[in-house]
Length: 149
Image 1: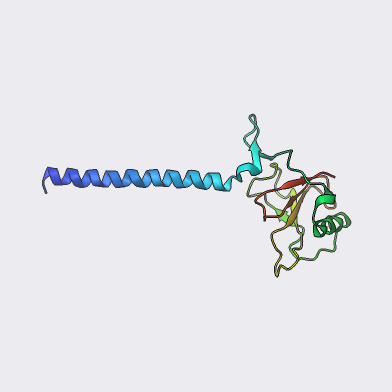
Image 2 (image 1 turned 120 degrees about the vertical axis):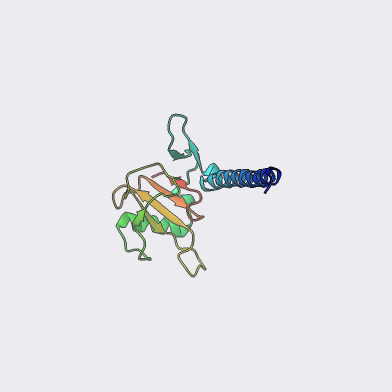
């Protein structure tokens, strides 16, 4: 093998490696943007943790009827319609304020016509029956609206 052929193979290999690196960097930054929730949360300049924007609130009276019924069931401590209601919500999406593990619990808001649990949920933080720190999502954790109590 001549030096000339070796260099051209080496140069082609380096070019392919650089292209893969650039493509990987573009892919990871795109995924980071997509999974961050975009406008669903903002970062405080002094805090690296995402926080729910204060403008995103919804009064209980403006919630769907099924959501109001779910809030009533949470306040009463049950009974709940679905076995998974009340399980720990881990906040993997980091859309809600950071709290210790086990702080948040999720509850299904029935969706009329859905044959499964649907996408609507209420997530409440703190002790059971506490409605001081609750959020509504109509799109399966993509966005949250705080429910002021």
